[in-house]
Length: 574
Ligand SMILES: Cc1cc2nc3c(=O)[nH]c(=O)nc-3n(C[C@H](O)[C@H](O)[C@H](O)COP(=O)(O)OP(=O)(O)OC[C@H]3O[C@@H](n4cnc5c(N)ncnc54)[C@H](O)[C@@H]3O)c2cc1C
Image (tube, rainbow, N blue to C red; front, side, top):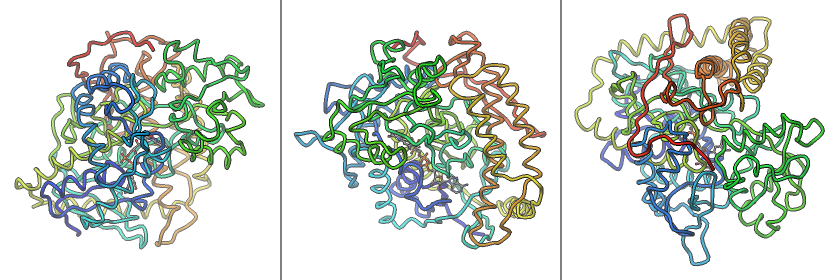
Protein backbone atom coordinates (compact mmCIF):
# COMPACT_ATOMS: atom_id res chain seq x y z
CA UNK A 1 0.00 0.00 0.00
CA UNK A 2 1.33 3.41 -1.00
CA UNK A 3 1.16 6.11 1.67
CA UNK A 4 1.20 9.91 1.56
CA UNK A 5 0.10 12.68 3.89
CA UNK A 6 -1.81 14.37 1.08
CA UNK A 7 -2.82 13.00 -2.30
CA UNK A 8 -3.83 15.48 -5.00
CA UNK A 9 -5.83 13.81 -7.77
CA UNK A 10 -5.69 15.92 -10.95
CA UNK A 11 -2.85 18.02 -12.33
CA UNK A 12 -4.80 20.89 -13.90
CA UNK A 13 -4.67 24.38 -12.43
CA UNK A 14 -6.70 23.33 -9.40
CA UNK A 15 -4.54 20.30 -8.55
CA UNK A 16 -1.20 21.99 -9.13
CA UNK A 17 -2.24 25.12 -7.20
CA UNK A 18 -3.37 22.91 -4.30
CA UNK A 19 -0.15 20.89 -4.26
CA UNK A 20 2.04 23.99 -4.28
CA UNK A 21 0.07 25.77 -1.57
CA UNK A 22 0.06 22.66 0.65
CA UNK A 23 3.85 22.43 0.39
CA UNK A 24 4.43 26.14 0.83
CA UNK A 25 2.36 25.96 4.00
CA UNK A 26 4.38 23.21 5.57
CA UNK A 27 2.94 19.90 4.35
CA UNK A 28 5.88 17.68 3.53
CA UNK A 29 4.59 14.54 1.88
CA UNK A 30 2.33 15.69 -0.98
CA UNK A 31 1.85 13.68 -4.17
CA UNK A 32 -0.06 14.35 -7.40
CA UNK A 33 -1.83 11.64 -9.39
CA UNK A 34 -3.18 12.20 -12.91
CA UNK A 35 -4.53 10.04 -15.71
CA UNK A 36 -2.88 12.20 -18.40
CA UNK A 37 0.54 13.84 -18.30
CA UNK A 38 0.21 16.94 -16.07
CA UNK A 39 0.50 19.50 -18.87
CA UNK A 40 -2.06 17.61 -20.96
CA UNK A 41 -4.73 18.45 -18.38
CA UNK A 42 -7.61 20.37 -19.96
CA UNK A 43 -6.52 23.61 -18.28
CA UNK A 44 -3.79 23.72 -20.90
CA UNK A 45 -6.42 24.30 -23.63
CA UNK A 46 -7.84 27.45 -22.03
CA UNK A 47 -7.63 30.31 -24.46
CA UNK A 48 -9.12 33.67 -23.66
CA UNK A 49 -7.96 34.77 -20.22
CA UNK A 50 -8.08 34.84 -16.44
CA UNK A 51 -10.06 37.52 -14.60
CA UNK A 52 -8.81 40.08 -12.06
CA UNK A 53 -9.84 43.67 -11.40
CA UNK A 54 -6.34 45.09 -11.97
CA UNK A 55 -7.82 48.10 -13.74
CA UNK A 56 -4.94 48.29 -16.22
CA UNK A 57 -7.10 49.32 -19.19
CA UNK A 58 -10.06 51.02 -17.45
CA UNK A 59 -11.07 51.72 -13.83
CA UNK A 60 -12.21 48.57 -12.03
CA UNK A 61 -12.90 47.24 -8.53
CA UNK A 62 -13.22 43.91 -6.73
CA UNK A 63 -16.83 44.83 -5.81
CA UNK A 64 -17.69 45.18 -9.45
CA UNK A 65 -16.06 41.80 -10.23
CA UNK A 66 -17.97 40.24 -7.36
CA UNK A 67 -21.32 41.69 -8.48
CA UNK A 68 -20.76 40.75 -12.14
CA UNK A 69 -20.06 37.17 -11.02
CA UNK A 70 -23.25 36.94 -8.94
CA UNK A 71 -25.41 38.55 -11.62
CA UNK A 72 -23.74 36.41 -14.31
CA UNK A 73 -24.60 33.34 -12.22
CA UNK A 74 -28.28 34.38 -12.24
CA UNK A 75 -28.19 34.75 -8.43
CA UNK A 76 -27.53 31.07 -7.74
CA UNK A 77 -23.94 31.80 -6.62
CA UNK A 78 -23.11 31.52 -2.93
CA UNK A 79 -22.08 35.09 -2.36
CA UNK A 80 -19.23 34.65 0.12
CA UNK A 81 -17.59 32.31 -2.39
CA UNK A 82 -17.90 34.96 -5.11
CA UNK A 83 -16.45 37.62 -2.81
CA UNK A 84 -13.43 35.46 -1.99
CA UNK A 85 -12.91 34.82 -5.71
CA UNK A 86 -12.93 38.50 -6.66
CA UNK A 87 -10.89 39.68 -3.66
CA UNK A 88 -8.12 37.16 -4.25
CA UNK A 89 -7.90 37.67 -8.00
CA UNK A 90 -5.31 40.49 -8.24
CA UNK A 91 -2.81 38.79 -5.89
CA UNK A 92 -3.28 35.51 -7.71
CA UNK A 93 -2.32 37.13 -11.03
CA UNK A 94 0.74 38.83 -9.52
CA UNK A 95 1.81 35.58 -7.93
CA UNK A 96 1.49 33.74 -11.25
CA UNK A 97 3.50 36.48 -12.90
CA UNK A 98 6.22 36.13 -10.28
CA UNK A 99 6.29 32.39 -10.96
CA UNK A 100 7.16 33.21 -14.55
CA UNK A 101 3.83 33.20 -16.39
CA UNK A 102 4.25 35.43 -19.43
CA UNK A 103 1.14 37.61 -19.86
CA UNK A 104 0.50 39.84 -22.90
CA UNK A 105 1.32 43.52 -22.21
CA UNK A 106 -0.09 47.01 -22.76
CA UNK A 107 2.03 49.61 -24.62
CA UNK A 108 3.38 50.84 -21.28
CA UNK A 109 4.32 47.36 -20.07
CA UNK A 110 1.42 46.52 -17.73
CA UNK A 111 -0.46 43.22 -17.89
CA UNK A 112 -2.92 43.68 -20.79
CA UNK A 113 -6.65 43.16 -20.16
CA UNK A 114 -9.44 42.54 -22.66
CA UNK A 115 -13.23 42.73 -22.28
CA UNK A 116 -15.21 39.50 -21.73
CA UNK A 117 -18.90 38.62 -21.63
CA UNK A 118 -20.78 39.80 -18.53
CA UNK A 119 -17.77 41.64 -17.05
CA UNK A 120 -18.39 45.39 -16.90
CA UNK A 121 -14.67 46.28 -17.23
CA UNK A 122 -11.88 44.80 -19.34
CA UNK A 123 -10.75 42.25 -16.76
CA UNK A 124 -9.31 39.30 -18.67
CA UNK A 125 -5.53 38.97 -18.30
CA UNK A 126 -4.25 36.84 -21.16
CA UNK A 127 -1.29 35.33 -22.95
CA UNK A 128 -2.47 35.85 -26.56
CA UNK A 129 -5.14 33.13 -26.93
CA UNK A 130 -3.10 30.48 -25.12
CA UNK A 131 -3.62 31.60 -21.52
CA UNK A 132 -4.16 28.15 -20.00
CA UNK A 133 -0.99 26.89 -21.63
CA UNK A 134 1.06 29.75 -20.16
CA UNK A 135 -0.40 29.43 -16.65
CA UNK A 136 -0.28 25.63 -16.45
CA UNK A 137 3.33 25.47 -17.60
CA UNK A 138 4.29 28.23 -15.15
CA UNK A 139 2.75 26.29 -12.27
CA UNK A 140 4.20 22.98 -13.42
CA UNK A 141 7.71 24.41 -13.32
CA UNK A 142 7.15 25.32 -9.66
CA UNK A 143 5.69 21.90 -8.89
CA UNK A 144 8.75 20.24 -10.41
CA UNK A 145 11.05 22.62 -8.55
CA UNK A 146 9.34 21.71 -5.28
CA UNK A 147 10.02 18.04 -6.08
CA UNK A 148 6.39 16.92 -5.77
CA UNK A 149 6.07 13.18 -6.37
CA UNK A 150 3.89 12.77 -9.47
CA UNK A 151 2.05 9.63 -10.54
CA UNK A 152 1.61 10.49 -14.20
CA UNK A 153 -0.75 8.28 -16.24
CA UNK A 154 -2.28 6.64 -13.19
CA UNK A 155 -6.04 6.28 -13.15
CA UNK A 156 -8.16 6.68 -10.01
CA UNK A 157 -10.87 4.02 -9.79
CA UNK A 158 -12.53 4.64 -6.45
CA UNK A 159 -12.56 6.66 -3.25
CA UNK A 160 -12.78 5.26 0.25
CA UNK A 161 -14.84 7.10 2.86
CA UNK A 162 -15.57 5.43 6.18
CA UNK A 163 -17.59 7.03 9.00
CA UNK A 164 -17.51 10.33 7.13
CA UNK A 165 -13.74 10.33 7.00
CA UNK A 166 -11.77 9.97 3.79
CA UNK A 167 -9.20 7.18 3.87
CA UNK A 168 -7.61 7.10 0.44
CA UNK A 169 -8.16 5.94 -3.11
CA UNK A 170 -7.79 2.88 -5.31
CA UNK A 171 -5.84 3.51 -8.50
CA UNK A 172 -4.50 1.76 -11.58
CA UNK A 173 -1.01 2.26 -12.95
CA UNK A 174 -2.01 2.58 -16.62
CA UNK A 175 1.38 1.44 -17.83
CA UNK A 176 1.29 -1.92 -16.06
CA UNK A 177 -2.43 -2.35 -15.39
CA UNK A 178 -1.68 -3.02 -11.71
CA UNK A 179 -4.21 -1.90 -9.14
CA UNK A 180 -2.91 -0.28 -5.95
CA UNK A 181 -4.29 1.55 -2.97
CA UNK A 182 -3.04 4.90 -1.79
CA UNK A 183 -3.65 5.67 1.85
CA UNK A 184 -3.68 9.41 2.61
CA UNK A 185 -4.64 11.63 5.51
CA UNK A 186 -6.05 14.12 3.02
CA UNK A 187 -7.32 13.48 -0.50
CA UNK A 188 -8.01 16.33 -2.92
CA UNK A 189 -10.00 16.11 -6.17
CA UNK A 190 -9.20 18.53 -9.01
CA UNK A 191 -10.49 16.15 -11.64
CA UNK A 192 -12.14 18.59 -14.06
CA UNK A 193 -15.48 18.73 -15.86
CA UNK A 194 -17.79 16.40 -17.77
CA UNK A 195 -18.41 18.13 -21.11
CA UNK A 196 -17.77 14.86 -22.96
CA UNK A 197 -21.29 13.64 -22.20
CA UNK A 198 -22.49 15.96 -25.01
CA UNK A 199 -22.12 15.43 -28.73
CA UNK A 200 -20.69 18.87 -29.42
CA UNK A 201 -18.13 19.99 -26.86
CA UNK A 202 -14.96 22.00 -26.43
CA UNK A 203 -13.72 19.58 -23.78
CA UNK A 204 -10.71 17.28 -24.00
CA UNK A 205 -11.11 13.50 -24.24
CA UNK A 206 -10.20 13.27 -20.55
CA UNK A 207 -13.12 15.48 -19.39
CA UNK A 208 -15.38 12.56 -18.56
CA UNK A 209 -16.32 13.58 -15.02
CA UNK A 210 -14.62 10.61 -13.33
CA UNK A 211 -14.03 12.44 -10.06
CA UNK A 212 -17.65 13.52 -9.67
CA UNK A 213 -18.95 9.98 -10.25
CA UNK A 214 -16.35 8.42 -7.98
CA UNK A 215 -17.38 10.82 -5.19
CA UNK A 216 -21.08 10.13 -5.87
CA UNK A 217 -20.54 6.39 -5.64
CA UNK A 218 -18.77 6.93 -2.33
CA UNK A 219 -21.89 8.59 -0.93
CA UNK A 220 -21.23 12.27 -1.67
CA UNK A 221 -24.12 14.19 -3.29
CA UNK A 222 -23.50 16.17 -6.47
CA UNK A 223 -24.64 19.78 -6.58
CA UNK A 224 -26.36 21.69 -9.42
CA UNK A 225 -25.44 19.17 -12.10
CA UNK A 226 -28.18 20.38 -14.47
CA UNK A 227 -26.25 23.60 -15.05
CA UNK A 228 -24.05 23.00 -18.08
CA UNK A 229 -22.64 25.96 -19.91
CA UNK A 230 -22.93 26.01 -23.70
CA UNK A 231 -20.29 28.23 -25.21
CA UNK A 232 -21.58 30.30 -28.13
CA UNK A 233 -18.58 29.91 -30.41
CA UNK A 234 -17.67 26.30 -31.14
CA UNK A 235 -16.36 25.63 -34.65
CA UNK A 236 -19.31 24.35 -36.64
CA UNK A 237 -19.70 20.54 -36.50
CA UNK A 238 -16.47 20.16 -34.47
CA UNK A 239 -17.34 21.99 -31.28
CA UNK A 240 -13.71 23.09 -30.90
CA UNK A 241 -13.52 26.40 -29.11
CA UNK A 242 -13.00 29.76 -30.79
CA UNK A 243 -12.28 31.84 -27.70
CA UNK A 244 -14.63 34.51 -26.40
CA UNK A 245 -11.43 36.55 -26.60
CA UNK A 246 -12.38 37.02 -30.27
CA UNK A 247 -15.53 38.91 -29.26
CA UNK A 248 -13.47 40.58 -26.53
CA UNK A 249 -11.28 41.94 -29.31
CA UNK A 250 -14.39 43.18 -31.13
CA UNK A 251 -15.63 40.31 -33.36
CA UNK A 252 -19.31 40.32 -34.45
CA UNK A 253 -21.86 37.55 -34.53
CA UNK A 254 -23.95 37.42 -37.69
CA UNK A 255 -26.71 35.09 -38.84
CA UNK A 256 -27.22 33.48 -42.28
CA UNK A 257 -28.69 36.76 -43.55
CA UNK A 258 -25.68 38.77 -42.45
CA UNK A 259 -27.53 40.52 -39.55
CA UNK A 260 -25.84 41.30 -36.20
CA UNK A 261 -28.62 39.49 -34.41
CA UNK A 262 -27.51 40.17 -30.81
CA UNK A 263 -29.29 43.50 -31.12
CA UNK A 264 -32.54 41.61 -30.59
CA UNK A 265 -31.35 39.80 -27.42
CA UNK A 266 -28.94 42.03 -25.46
CA UNK A 267 -29.16 45.52 -26.85
CA UNK A 268 -26.55 47.03 -24.59
CA UNK A 269 -23.88 44.35 -24.23
CA UNK A 270 -24.48 42.82 -27.69
CA UNK A 271 -21.85 40.11 -28.40
CA UNK A 272 -20.46 40.53 -24.89
CA UNK A 273 -23.55 39.41 -23.00
CA UNK A 274 -22.97 36.30 -20.83
CA UNK A 275 -22.66 32.97 -22.60
CA UNK A 276 -26.04 31.50 -21.67
CA UNK A 277 -27.77 34.48 -23.27
CA UNK A 278 -25.63 34.47 -26.43
CA UNK A 279 -25.98 30.68 -26.91
CA UNK A 280 -29.77 30.93 -26.61
CA UNK A 281 -29.79 33.80 -29.10
CA UNK A 282 -27.80 31.73 -31.60
CA UNK A 283 -29.96 28.65 -31.11
CA UNK A 284 -33.09 30.78 -31.60
CA UNK A 285 -31.70 32.20 -34.87
CA UNK A 286 -30.90 28.66 -36.04
CA UNK A 287 -34.26 27.19 -34.92
CA UNK A 288 -36.21 30.04 -36.56
CA UNK A 289 -34.54 29.49 -39.92
CA UNK A 290 -32.02 32.32 -39.94
CA UNK A 291 -28.95 30.09 -39.70
CA UNK A 292 -26.33 29.58 -42.37
CA UNK A 293 -24.45 26.71 -44.08
CA UNK A 294 -26.21 24.02 -46.09
CA UNK A 295 -28.43 22.78 -43.24
CA UNK A 296 -29.00 26.16 -41.59
CA UNK A 297 -27.33 24.83 -38.43
CA UNK A 298 -24.70 27.56 -37.95
CA UNK A 299 -24.28 31.27 -37.37
CA UNK A 300 -21.03 33.17 -37.97
CA UNK A 301 -18.21 34.81 -36.05
CA UNK A 302 -16.96 37.69 -38.13
CA UNK A 303 -13.49 39.11 -37.42
CA UNK A 304 -12.71 40.62 -40.80
CA UNK A 305 -12.92 44.23 -39.60
CA UNK A 306 -10.20 43.61 -36.96
CA UNK A 307 -7.53 43.22 -39.64
CA UNK A 308 -4.82 40.60 -40.11
CA UNK A 309 -2.25 42.28 -37.84
CA UNK A 310 -4.45 42.28 -34.74
CA UNK A 311 -5.81 38.78 -35.43
CA UNK A 312 -2.36 37.25 -35.75
CA UNK A 313 -1.03 39.04 -32.66
CA UNK A 314 -3.94 38.46 -30.30
CA UNK A 315 -5.73 35.37 -31.67
CA UNK A 316 -3.14 33.27 -33.49
CA UNK A 317 -4.38 29.94 -32.15
CA UNK A 318 -7.98 30.35 -33.25
CA UNK A 319 -6.81 31.51 -36.69
CA UNK A 320 -4.90 28.22 -36.87
CA UNK A 321 -7.82 26.11 -35.59
CA UNK A 322 -10.26 27.64 -38.12
CA UNK A 323 -7.68 27.12 -40.86
CA UNK A 324 -6.90 23.49 -39.93
CA UNK A 325 -10.40 22.27 -39.11
CA UNK A 326 -12.60 24.33 -41.47
CA UNK A 327 -10.11 25.40 -44.15
CA UNK A 328 -11.05 29.05 -43.50
CA UNK A 329 -8.81 32.11 -43.36
CA UNK A 330 -10.73 34.20 -40.80
CA UNK A 331 -8.94 37.37 -41.90
CA UNK A 332 -10.95 37.09 -45.12
CA UNK A 333 -14.09 35.10 -44.23
CA UNK A 334 -16.45 34.72 -41.24
CA UNK A 335 -16.23 31.36 -39.44
CA UNK A 336 -19.33 29.14 -39.08
CA UNK A 337 -19.97 28.38 -35.42
CA UNK A 338 -22.58 26.82 -33.08
CA UNK A 339 -23.18 26.45 -29.33
CA UNK A 340 -20.96 23.77 -27.78
CA UNK A 341 -20.92 22.16 -24.32
CA UNK A 342 -18.14 23.86 -22.42
CA UNK A 343 -18.23 24.11 -18.65
CA UNK A 344 -19.77 22.19 -15.76
CA UNK A 345 -21.06 24.66 -13.16
CA UNK A 346 -22.06 21.87 -10.77
CA UNK A 347 -19.99 19.25 -9.03
CA UNK A 348 -18.78 18.01 -5.66
CA UNK A 349 -20.12 20.39 -2.97
CA UNK A 350 -17.50 22.17 -0.86
CA UNK A 351 -17.28 25.03 1.61
CA UNK A 352 -15.01 28.01 0.97
CA UNK A 353 -12.01 26.17 2.50
CA UNK A 354 -12.37 23.44 -0.12
CA UNK A 355 -13.64 20.87 2.40
CA UNK A 356 -16.21 18.55 0.86
CA UNK A 357 -19.65 18.81 2.46
CA UNK A 358 -22.32 16.17 2.12
CA UNK A 359 -25.69 17.48 3.29
CA UNK A 360 -28.09 20.41 3.36
CA UNK A 361 -26.36 21.77 6.49
CA UNK A 362 -22.94 21.70 4.81
CA UNK A 363 -21.43 19.15 7.22
CA UNK A 364 -17.79 18.43 6.48
CA UNK A 365 -16.41 15.03 5.42
CA UNK A 366 -13.03 14.88 7.17
CA UNK A 367 -9.89 14.65 5.05
CA UNK A 368 -11.67 15.08 1.72
CA UNK A 369 -11.21 18.20 -0.42
CA UNK A 370 -12.09 19.42 -3.92
CA UNK A 371 -11.65 22.51 -6.10
CA UNK A 372 -11.74 23.61 -9.72
CA UNK A 373 -14.25 22.47 -12.29
CA UNK A 374 -15.12 19.17 -10.58
CA UNK A 375 -16.18 21.05 -7.44
CA UNK A 376 -19.12 23.30 -6.63
CA UNK A 377 -18.24 25.92 -4.02
CA UNK A 378 -20.75 27.79 -6.14
CA UNK A 379 -19.02 30.94 -7.19
CA UNK A 380 -20.52 30.55 -10.68
CA UNK A 381 -24.11 29.75 -9.70
CA UNK A 382 -26.21 28.97 -12.76
CA UNK A 383 -23.79 30.39 -15.33
CA UNK A 384 -20.05 31.02 -15.14
CA UNK A 385 -18.57 34.18 -16.63
CA UNK A 386 -15.69 33.64 -19.05
CA UNK A 387 -12.21 33.87 -17.41
CA UNK A 388 -13.64 33.15 -13.95
CA UNK A 389 -12.85 29.44 -14.02
CA UNK A 390 -9.08 29.58 -14.48
CA UNK A 391 -9.25 32.07 -11.64
CA UNK A 392 -11.43 29.82 -9.52
CA UNK A 393 -9.13 26.83 -10.09
CA UNK A 394 -6.13 28.92 -8.94
CA UNK A 395 -7.79 30.78 -6.04
CA UNK A 396 -9.71 27.84 -4.58
CA UNK A 397 -6.98 25.33 -5.50
CA UNK A 398 -4.48 27.32 -3.42
CA UNK A 399 -6.96 28.05 -0.63
CA UNK A 400 -7.74 24.35 -0.37
CA UNK A 401 -4.01 23.50 -0.42
CA UNK A 402 -3.65 25.70 2.67
CA UNK A 403 -6.54 23.92 4.42
CA UNK A 404 -4.91 20.59 3.61
CA UNK A 405 -1.61 21.74 5.12
CA UNK A 406 -3.42 22.81 8.32
CA UNK A 407 -5.22 19.48 8.48
CA UNK A 408 -2.18 17.23 8.03
CA UNK A 409 -0.01 19.34 10.35
CA UNK A 410 -2.64 19.35 13.09
CA UNK A 411 -2.49 15.68 13.92
CA UNK A 412 -4.65 14.09 11.19
CA UNK A 413 -4.16 10.35 11.30
CA UNK A 414 -4.38 7.57 8.77
CA UNK A 415 -4.44 4.80 11.40
CA UNK A 416 -6.99 2.04 10.98
CA UNK A 417 -7.58 2.70 7.29
CA UNK A 418 -6.04 -0.53 6.06
CA UNK A 419 -9.04 -2.84 6.10
CA UNK A 420 -11.38 -0.43 4.31
CA UNK A 421 -8.72 0.22 1.67
CA UNK A 422 -7.99 -3.48 1.12
CA UNK A 423 -11.71 -4.22 0.74
CA UNK A 424 -12.05 -1.37 -1.75
CA UNK A 425 -9.04 -2.69 -3.66
CA UNK A 426 -10.63 -6.14 -3.91
CA UNK A 427 -13.86 -4.58 -5.23
CA UNK A 428 -11.89 -2.53 -7.78
CA UNK A 429 -9.99 -5.59 -9.01
CA UNK A 430 -13.26 -7.45 -9.41
CA UNK A 431 -14.79 -4.48 -11.28
CA UNK A 432 -11.87 -4.13 -13.70
CA UNK A 433 -11.86 -7.88 -14.34
CA UNK A 434 -15.58 -7.71 -15.07
CA UNK A 435 -14.90 -4.94 -17.60
CA UNK A 436 -12.01 -6.92 -19.13
CA UNK A 437 -14.32 -9.90 -19.61
CA UNK A 438 -17.14 -7.91 -21.27
CA UNK A 439 -18.04 -9.91 -24.35
CA UNK A 440 -21.54 -8.96 -25.51
CA UNK A 441 -22.88 -8.02 -28.94
CA UNK A 442 -23.03 -4.23 -28.37
CA UNK A 443 -20.24 -1.78 -29.28
CA UNK A 444 -19.37 0.81 -26.63
CA UNK A 445 -18.63 3.36 -29.36
CA UNK A 446 -22.21 3.13 -30.69
CA UNK A 447 -23.67 3.57 -27.21
CA UNK A 448 -21.42 6.55 -26.60
CA UNK A 449 -22.46 8.23 -29.87
CA UNK A 450 -26.15 7.72 -29.12
CA UNK A 451 -25.78 8.97 -25.55
CA UNK A 452 -24.02 12.17 -26.64
CA UNK A 453 -26.56 12.79 -29.39
CA UNK A 454 -29.51 12.26 -27.02
CA UNK A 455 -28.00 14.64 -24.42
CA UNK A 456 -27.40 17.34 -27.02
CA UNK A 457 -30.89 17.06 -28.54
CA UNK A 458 -32.92 16.68 -25.35
CA UNK A 459 -30.85 18.31 -22.62
CA UNK A 460 -28.99 20.98 -24.62
CA UNK A 461 -29.32 24.77 -24.86
CA UNK A 462 -33.13 24.52 -24.56
CA UNK A 463 -34.95 21.88 -22.52
CA UNK A 464 -38.57 20.81 -22.11
CA UNK A 465 -40.52 18.28 -20.07
CA UNK A 466 -41.47 15.74 -22.75
CA UNK A 467 -38.04 15.39 -24.39
CA UNK A 468 -36.44 15.18 -20.93
CA UNK A 469 -38.81 12.37 -19.96
CA UNK A 470 -37.99 10.55 -23.19
CA UNK A 471 -34.32 11.09 -22.48
CA UNK A 472 -34.61 9.46 -19.06
CA UNK A 473 -36.01 6.32 -20.70
CA UNK A 474 -33.38 6.35 -23.45
CA UNK A 475 -30.60 6.64 -20.91
CA UNK A 476 -31.95 3.62 -19.03
CA UNK A 477 -31.97 1.65 -22.29
CA UNK A 478 -28.42 2.74 -23.08
CA UNK A 479 -27.37 1.59 -19.61
CA UNK A 480 -28.95 -1.82 -20.26
CA UNK A 481 -27.20 -2.05 -23.64
CA UNK A 482 -23.90 -1.04 -22.02
CA UNK A 483 -24.19 -4.11 -19.77
CA UNK A 484 -24.13 -6.18 -23.01
CA UNK A 485 -21.18 -4.37 -24.59
CA UNK A 486 -17.78 -5.83 -25.31
CA UNK A 487 -14.14 -4.96 -24.80
CA UNK A 488 -11.72 -5.89 -27.61
CA UNK A 489 -8.38 -5.50 -25.86
CA UNK A 490 -7.97 -7.82 -22.89
CA UNK A 491 -4.32 -7.01 -22.26
CA UNK A 492 -2.83 -5.47 -19.12
CA UNK A 493 -0.43 -2.80 -20.34
CA UNK A 494 -1.77 0.59 -21.32
CA UNK A 495 -5.22 -0.77 -22.04
CA UNK A 496 -7.13 2.28 -23.27
CA UNK A 497 -10.08 0.12 -24.28
CA UNK A 498 -10.73 -0.78 -20.64
CA UNK A 499 -10.21 2.79 -19.47
CA UNK A 500 -12.60 4.18 -22.08
CA UNK A 501 -15.17 1.60 -21.04
CA UNK A 502 -14.83 2.70 -17.41
CA UNK A 503 -15.16 6.34 -18.49
CA UNK A 504 -18.28 5.37 -20.41
CA UNK A 505 -19.69 3.78 -17.25
CA UNK A 506 -19.01 7.10 -15.47
CA UNK A 507 -20.60 9.19 -18.20
CA UNK A 508 -23.76 7.07 -18.27
CA UNK A 509 -24.12 7.66 -14.54
CA UNK A 510 -23.61 11.42 -14.98
CA UNK A 511 -26.16 11.78 -17.79
CA UNK A 512 -28.87 10.39 -15.49
CA UNK A 513 -28.06 12.94 -12.79
CA UNK A 514 -27.98 15.86 -15.22
CA UNK A 515 -31.25 14.77 -16.85
CA UNK A 516 -32.98 14.24 -13.47
CA UNK A 517 -31.92 17.68 -12.21
CA UNK A 518 -33.02 19.31 -15.48
CA UNK A 519 -36.40 17.58 -15.47
CA UNK A 520 -37.11 18.52 -11.88
CA UNK A 521 -36.11 22.19 -12.14
CA UNK A 522 -39.23 23.88 -13.49
CA UNK A 523 -37.76 27.29 -14.24
CA UNK A 524 -35.14 28.91 -16.47
CA UNK A 525 -32.01 30.18 -14.79
CA UNK A 526 -28.56 30.73 -16.31
CA UNK A 527 -27.41 27.70 -18.26
CA UNK A 528 -30.64 25.79 -17.59
CA UNK A 529 -33.36 26.99 -19.95
CA UNK A 530 -36.80 25.36 -20.05
CA UNK A 531 -39.06 26.25 -22.98
CA UNK A 532 -42.06 25.23 -20.86
CA UNK A 533 -40.94 27.36 -17.87
CA UNK A 534 -39.22 30.35 -19.49
CA UNK A 535 -39.05 32.52 -16.33
CA UNK A 536 -36.70 32.39 -13.38
CA UNK A 537 -38.75 31.43 -10.32
CA UNK A 538 -37.05 32.63 -7.14
CA UNK A 539 -40.07 31.71 -5.05
CA UNK A 540 -39.73 27.99 -5.72
CA UNK A 541 -36.25 27.52 -7.23
CA UNK A 542 -33.72 29.83 -5.62
CA UNK A 543 -31.98 26.74 -4.25
CA UNK A 544 -29.17 24.33 -5.07
CA UNK A 545 -29.92 20.81 -6.24
CA UNK A 546 -28.23 17.93 -4.38
CA UNK A 547 -28.36 14.53 -6.12
CA UNK A 548 -27.73 11.45 -3.94
CA UNK A 549 -27.16 7.98 -5.33
CA UNK A 550 -29.82 5.49 -4.18
CA UNK A 551 -29.34 1.73 -3.81
CA UNK A 552 -30.96 1.04 -7.18
CA UNK A 553 -28.47 3.42 -8.82
CA UNK A 554 -30.95 6.23 -9.58
CA UNK A 555 -30.50 9.74 -8.17
CA UNK A 556 -32.68 11.13 -5.36
CA UNK A 557 -32.91 14.93 -5.41
CA UNK A 558 -32.84 17.20 -2.39
CA UNK A 559 -32.26 20.93 -2.21
CA UNK A 560 -30.23 23.36 -0.13
CA UNK A 561 -30.42 27.10 0.28
CA UNK A 562 -28.36 29.69 -1.59
CA UNK A 563 -26.24 32.06 0.44
CA UNK A 564 -27.38 35.61 -0.23
CA UNK A 565 -25.20 38.23 1.49
CA UNK A 566 -25.01 41.57 -0.32
CA UNK A 567 -26.99 41.19 -3.50
CA UNK A 568 -30.71 40.48 -3.46
CA UNK A 569 -31.83 38.79 -6.68
CA UNK A 570 -32.87 41.26 -9.37
CA UNK A 571 -34.03 40.98 -12.94
CA UNK A 572 -31.00 40.09 -15.08
CA UNK A 573 -30.69 42.44 -18.07
CA UNK A 574 -27.73 43.17 -20.36
C1 LIG B 1 -11.10 24.73 -24.75
C2 LIG B 1 -11.30 25.40 -23.42
C3 LIG B 1 -10.95 26.72 -23.24
C4 LIG B 1 -11.15 27.33 -22.01
N1 LIG B 1 -10.78 28.64 -21.86
C5 LIG B 1 -10.91 29.24 -20.64
C6 LIG B 1 -10.45 30.56 -20.44
O1 LIG B 1 -9.90 31.21 -21.32
N2 LIG B 1 -10.61 31.10 -19.20
C7 LIG B 1 -11.19 30.41 -18.17
O2 LIG B 1 -11.28 30.95 -17.07
N3 LIG B 1 -11.60 29.13 -18.34
C8 LIG B 1 -11.47 28.52 -19.55
N4 LIG B 1 -11.89 27.23 -19.70
C9 LIG B 1 -12.33 26.46 -18.53
C10 LIG B 1 -11.10 26.06 -17.70
O3 LIG B 1 -10.04 25.75 -18.56
C11 LIG B 1 -11.37 24.86 -16.81
O4 LIG B 1 -12.55 25.00 -16.09
C12 LIG B 1 -10.22 24.68 -15.80
O5 LIG B 1 -8.99 24.72 -16.47
C13 LIG B 1 -10.37 23.39 -15.05
O6 LIG B 1 -9.22 23.13 -14.31
P1 LIG B 1 -9.17 21.90 -13.30
O7 LIG B 1 -7.83 21.97 -12.67
O8 LIG B 1 -10.36 21.93 -12.46
O9 LIG B 1 -9.29 20.60 -14.24
P2 LIG B 1 -8.51 20.08 -15.54
O10 LIG B 1 -7.53 21.06 -16.05
O11 LIG B 1 -9.56 19.60 -16.47
O12 LIG B 1 -7.68 18.86 -14.99
C14 LIG B 1 -8.28 17.66 -14.58
C15 LIG B 1 -7.21 16.73 -14.06
O13 LIG B 1 -7.81 15.60 -13.45
C16 LIG B 1 -7.15 14.43 -13.85
N5 LIG B 1 -8.11 13.30 -13.75
C17 LIG B 1 -9.41 13.28 -14.11
N6 LIG B 1 -9.94 12.07 -13.86
C18 LIG B 1 -8.95 11.30 -13.33
C19 LIG B 1 -8.88 9.96 -12.90
N7 LIG B 1 -9.93 9.12 -12.95
N8 LIG B 1 -7.69 9.50 -12.41
C20 LIG B 1 -6.60 10.33 -12.37
N9 LIG B 1 -6.63 11.61 -12.78
C21 LIG B 1 -7.79 12.09 -13.26
C22 LIG B 1 -6.72 14.72 -15.27
O14 LIG B 1 -5.66 13.87 -15.66
C23 LIG B 1 -6.28 16.18 -15.15
O15 LIG B 1 -4.96 16.26 -14.69
C24 LIG B 1 -11.71 26.61 -20.94
C25 LIG B 1 -12.05 25.27 -21.12
C26 LIG B 1 -11.89 24.68 -22.34
C27 LIG B 1 -12.32 23.25 -22.50
